[in-house]
Length: 198
Image (cartoon, rainbow, N blue to C red; front, side, top):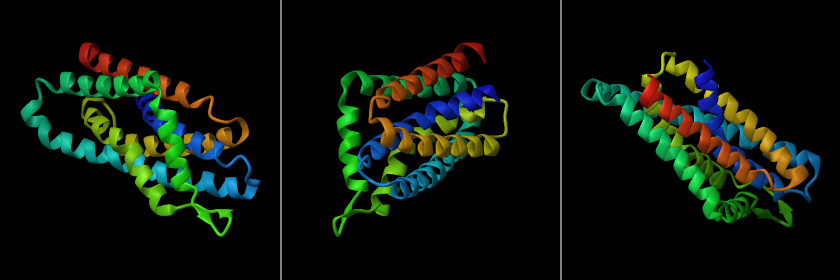
């Protein structure tokens, strides 16, 4: 169960970083607006992050018969690659600018008041959860109920997204890179464990 929680936290970091960006862009907005934004971030990101690993799990289960011997190595490499990608994005420094651009799209201007562009929010939820689909393959290698694991991933992501909007609203974007780096390191660690200690 600890592995699932760590995986859920690591996968939630992408959505958390984006939620912080959304909150930071809303610093001039009132509490009611930020509450609504936090609710939608939690809803969109949580649902997408719960469904995507389930898709990865089901695809992985279909392939596992053919790949049984190599499955721990494949799963480990997937997680290490995802973690490495997150760490690279932190070092490259492109992520913060990308998040700023995305936040501008989500917080569409409506008659001089900031509204929430739901189409962009949906697209963003899918984009931040694509990595979770690849990680879902590894659920076949862990001794746990995959449906429960996906529910935990969804809930953890929703909570982090909710908190992320408030953190960004209150304190700006200083936590974005740290969240990404932590998520990347945890994914690499779980990948190594699957490869060498399963």
